Length: 580
Image (cartoon, rainbow, N blue to C red):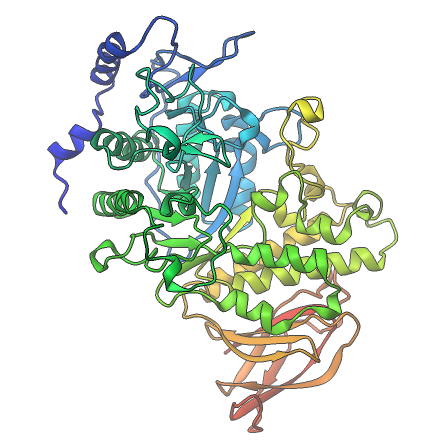
């Protein structure tokens, strides 16, 4: 399908004056005086003591209007994504801003080696605690965090640091709000949405778009284009794709991988056609864009080109991986962890379809759950994270496993990597937005970066290791290399060994056993150098290995390999050896 300039103009009128005139005209037709909202509103905010979000004409003066200074960075072959929410991105007990994120958070992200930012909760949402997933104004950046031009500056400054910015876009459903949302815009329940039961999401309490409607498709496609051209976004993470793919929306449904689950009357072909159209349009019009699918079902062809009959995404999220880690930490002792199952979960992805791997995201941090660090160290994070306090077994275990889990997921789990804001340094507790149930408190609705900046606290060591992983990946490019090849998965030793991108990754998950002369097979003979060691002192390890060691293969067969290496392998530690 080709997209001419005239076709694109029909989807979205880029001239601001024309856009506002058209909005005013259509508003006279559809908009009654008691409805302070419009579907294409570009700026809405909540007046003091008001409940609804009102549409306001936004026309900044020359001083306030932001003009981009930097070119878009090149599309990375392997995205290392920093998932962030502007409102929680500071220590203060309140809502942070675009400006604060630009000045204080962007430099941290760049320093830690991430090349992509994924911004959540940008599309305006009346209910803050919805985490941005109950959108009321699809064309309006959230006014809680500042002005549209301050968002433009944030994105442009990220470009200046060589970082792409993705929008977490919500086209899978919409808020059921009537006063300041799309619901019942023309007085019926079928404007923008399916009428009757099909137009309501039973679990989310939201409205389902009618993707078969021509004007709905125009609305959503123009929405994609608007965020790219008006604000400079470099791509999208499409939320709730599983809900779109099936008439059952994934509710009460388990996916085993059987093809009957993906091809049948339960599949919503109208939604799939919209996703194909969106990906086809976006990639042909903007070749620099990256699109990511949030799908837990494993739909075949999700990340294959539309020309092949695929849905057209660049990447899908590896959603089974964080679920596995939480389940292991909740339900099993360390010694009962099944090494083969861990490896299978990390390696189990469709050939030719790229995956963004992650150990935890915002889902795992939300109230009712906890971050990985808090699952492992719990109450002792309040008492023993100071370097002046006792280094207990709980803290020692938690910090060691935090490092190992993240490197293992990063190197074996996919072709891209994602980290949720604050988890790079083991942010404690959980995430809970202000609501009646917590007394409208912001206590747990923030990211305390000061924890990692305090030289007397142990959080700094976890952040150091996270940065070291990204730095080494930048040098070796393992994420853009073919998938890792596992040479050893030892249940008895609790050891995982695999090679990828000219590197050998070795993990010893045993709680107490170190191996003094551990032999394992190597596919490529030669000289290997120790380039990363989680047990280093700068990562709060026990420094049981000498730095910069060199190892030479010997012609001894092991693990079905003609060559082997012998190394000292500390307990609860991981190392990376690079071939010279």
